[in-house]
Length: 244
Image (cartoon, rainbow, N blue to C red):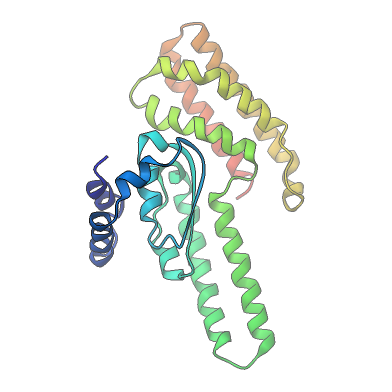
């Protein structure tokens, strides 16, 4: 992977100073050898991630497409400048809406911190925390079972399907069914318990569509694979909408 080219493309649309900054970081830091030390799957947390350069490079490396990546930074401006990795592309609209509310909360908190009203400061801090939690909910799965399913679906939908690698899709279909079955048995956290019925209905639909995809592969119905993958992806998106 060409780290310089990848970084430049990843921050396309960002202000020129930001793009130059990340470009210089790539040239002066050993990202290549560092990225090679990461496992192909698992979780990674970048503390003080800044503009999220390391996470962006990792997310665009095919070898690390199943690695769950997280970055944290104390600077609200850096949060605004963060670029979601490809695996979260469906979350972009919700993320940008959340940023609007998050920025309002940051402004309100700074104003309260500059004043002398302790209650106003506490209220602003609580609101800031709530908005941050909403941002986390946008990108963090509601259950580990959902995350496990999505990691496989992402590769199928964004890599295997466009490249017409139907054999590869068939090879992971059984695993997708197993993971979809796990989703139907997932237990939501207490704060999401009210959505359990809708979640279970959407999970059941996801399982049905995934089984149909597996069956088509076993039957050699290659011509049906694209439409069935689209239906699986649609069922997954419906599952996500339960929590919007």
